[in-house]
Length: 343
Image (cartoon, rainbow, N blue to C red; front, side):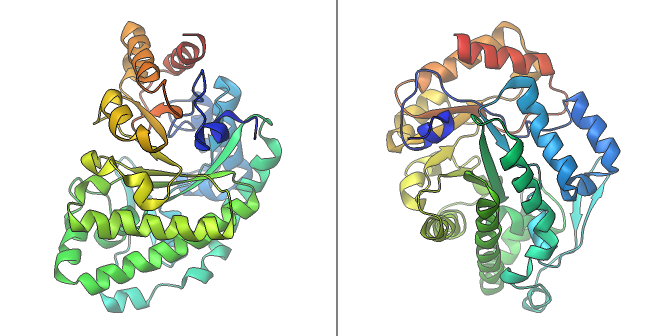
């Protein structure tokens, strides 16, 4: 049994103090991140500069002593590696060339042709596997096929994922082919991260909550199940975290349906509900509201203790319900970590 606390929790062990890390822990709320990003020039340049990407991954570990570091990259590097154009508009986020037809799909590369573009990401993982403290777990990741497809089809993020839903409903064959390509390519991408030194991988399905009924089964559950089955075949014992954000009732049974070792929870569900309905199947991760990282104070302490208390009887990794926001106060992160570890 590893002495790394996150690996122990992922194997189903209930620990007296939950391990902790944060989504987007390397990010704009940290002055040292902003300085390194300025040095890189822009966001994508930072993602593809292995030394600087490793540096920003290490920054929150040095500052807070988190139990895990998550590779600094972006979910849209994979579709870029498949041949989509990707750029970022200042203040507005990512923009992509769109794929909305069978003809457009044919212009993309195959799943085995992504690695030249993504080689700097694998190098970042190799650097981190050497430089992280021995007690710190290294997490690799990708976006889930549905979530990545929503950006590829619309060319940008949207609140309702309308363009992806429209293609799914009007040309299900083409939509399913996009999902299949992303599923296969994501397997190759994560597998290379594991070969480079990632000890855990996480699948981020940020827009899973907009899939309902059979669509949730077909395009959130099934691609995740396929990915996990193949990754575990290639890498026996690899722990995998799945994050079907805002799945609601869909969180129930998600671990069993997909084979995930841990289900990450957003903060639209209460920790008490999740303990009763999701943690019964194994490890959960989450799920404090990120706003407490902005507001701080006694509310932060109380919210932290509530999450710890709710999940105390089973395997749990403490995290936020979504990524920490740029306006968060770094001192509030320290307060959260101290509260988890010192009660």
